[in-house]
Image (cartoon, rainbow, N blue to C red; front, top):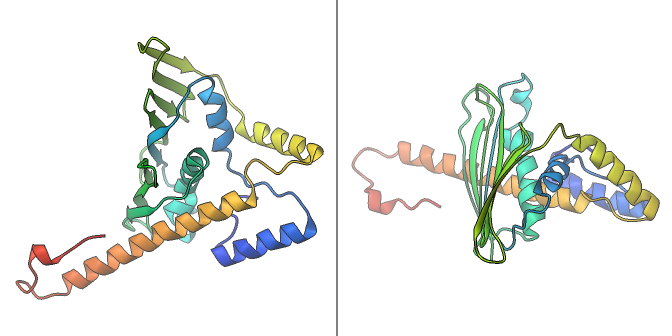
Length: 239
């Protein structure tokens, strides 16, 4: 199933219930999981302290019907949630609608209970495509370029010395890896790697990000409507 799996969380819940009732396996098209898994190789990134994701793309003409979170950021949201294996306790987001009626550039910040933070940026106003993903842990830093399939990492070894490595992967085929994994899991009676529950959680976090953006826009409109001189800066609290 393509991402996002449904337009809203209610439809996603009905789809999950129907799949369970019919006892069928459904896998969601989070291809970047398979790209990152191969590029991680033997890089050890635990416990994760910070994640930075940047996904930029030139306009392809389909944008008027979908926001940039659902269009682009949703892939990085899945990566963050699958790596953290936790639900964020705080979400902040902002994003203007510049060339369409929906957010075209979005900056989101997710905080987790253990103190880890993920920062995500998605934009479809760009000259060229960029797909960068960075992971910071106590003993390592790894930067992934999903366009060139290049990995650069700094990692402490057993002697606490920092080892710098740069690895250029050849052409990767995450779609083939995903389909192969799905077939093997079905034959072995195992649940898909990217299942409906995972996709439903991503959808929920997407809605919370869009909700943050709507609320922040509402605050800006309210402040802009106040006559000059009636509100001091100290009276305004942004959440």
